[in-house]
Length: 129
Image (cartoon, rainbow, N blue to C red):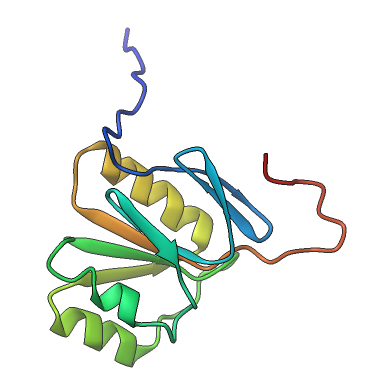
């Protein structure tokens, strides 16, 4: 018989949830796209907003980039710029990036994520609490 244990994030900031246009990080709701790394987070302007991602170089082993509700190819020049600074990156859909970040964060790995918010829909019933 195996037992499940609750993830321990220590002082790091896990992604608790997300919905149309928002993320819940360590219990706090933030609107719009974000980046998260260890004990730090901030707003993010999307794939063209490279400064906050480049600032993570040397602090992380890998950066997960959430491209929205579907996976999309990362711009080659963005990948090259991040890798030139020693920061490996992996593009995936935002839900997958958030989950992968949480799993590796709970293992104590040096990871971060930059997440494009899920699209807001006029009839969206989910709201942040």
